[in-house]
Length: 116
Image 1 (cartoon, rainbow, N blue to C red):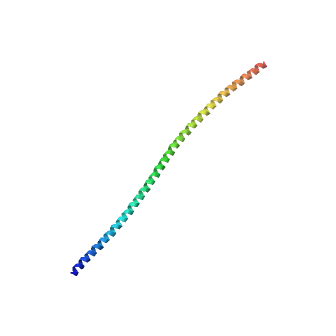
Image 2: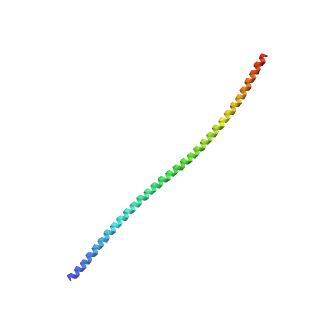
Image 3: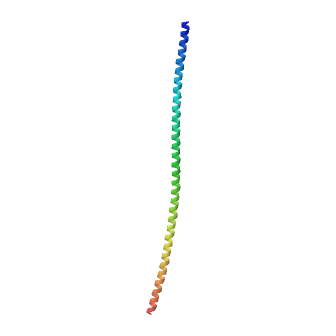
């Protein structure tokens, strides 16, 4: 009878040992899976942060391009206005010169007429 119980006891111990090994292995796999999940979550959060930064920079870049285009258009409009103003100034200068020449010419003729 002792041999029979010894063999059953031996089998039970082997089953306990095997179950313990399986439990330890399962706990290790669970811990490893949790660590991978935590790393994935951290990487996912980092990706979200990087994506948000990328979106923010893209928006700022597009804003600067738009602003630069606007500034360039403003500069071109101001340059055109300046050229128009310079042309008007030259025109007025020529007209004034002609009037001054005519005025001076009239004064000269009046002076000559007085001398005669």
